Length: 125
Image: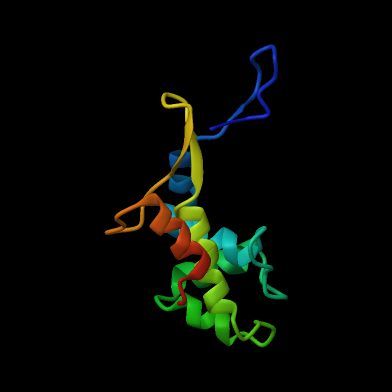
């Protein structure tokens, strides 16, 4: 992904595969680590930064339960975390060939894009 692309062609190239290899994380664990550390869709739990989020996500199979059980976690943290996951995994992006917005990936078994949007808004976890 190119960031801060300037008119002279200069920019910052970030290669996700290299980042994941360096951190020894899967894409899913990386996303979960970032969500737990705090993002636009959910605040972090007090005392949880990027390093502690990585440690908990990597060392615990049921890491969502670990996050939920922390003293400063809101009662609905697990639900809000899962909703943030849905946003990141099924976000809308621009298809430069079709000149339209499309979902980055569809929900498994999702028959339509409209159904996916409704799931993000109304599905309970």
